[in-house]
Length: 426
Image (cartoon, rainbow, N blue to C red; front, top):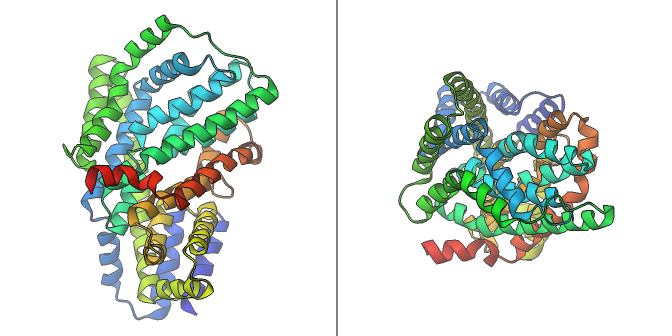
């Protein structure tokens, strides 16, 4: 009964717009106060334990690295290089949008950072070139979800901590699915371009390609340093995040000289604010997840699903449906922290590797960022594009189709996710 009350209170708080971390902590504390069976020090212990993890140190550093990249003008160089590479296709800036997101994914690891940083440049460029604003917003929103799939990835770090899975294996598992997402979205853009007769934005030029590559070369080394260092074992994901920050500082302050001390202070404060919010959500969700686990809610839910069917395929379909629905209402980090203890045992029980399930979970929750009522990417882009949230949601809806197709491929063809981890680590 108390668990039901806690879940109802959480849902009501989220619906009325209470921040996710406060909603999780508030509903959990209500349970603690009413039940009277949980000592206060246990609550504090669980919150501290939730964030007392070395891999979680990667989160503030990856956020800082992404902010530094945006502030140092690195995103402009990447966008110019992507335009020279593929802007000659019909609907070229739509394809450029996706390729730029793939390149930036190797630096930020967060969909909102991609949408807020690259999105400003991409939407302005597409609007100036005569593209429909709805199309520009939809492509930008959909392509931003690639960021947390291609390594590095903040949600993968959180999942790795909660599932006791190798973050390095999770990073390598996301590489091929991220490329599949890019291909699927580019096919969607090609279909739109043909249907609406969009132009070729630039002629292909070897000289322009060489020039933009030269300008972007040092920026493009960032994902090589991060991903290459992790995959070769040169450093851990946390150390990779620190290396990315140092490299971004060198580029912004010494090489490009685009980062002033005032701007650096602003970036630092923004990073502190974002990191504090994320880590508070992790801490609050840790209490919530512990209450669910200690009351055997996870076991009852597993028994319920197993009782409905013994088919691994149907169970995976149901797990995807649960993840999709939760992703519509809950922030990614909170959803991962709460759902991993509930859903991972079920997935493992039907033979799904924890690393494989991590990719399934993160991709599902990325799709949730494009769906109301809690679509964070949509809120960011509605402000960037100057259109209302409802219009932004409607424009993005068709682009959910290729992402759902990729999700189905990844779910039912494990080799897409597991080939690289098996090759490198096992």
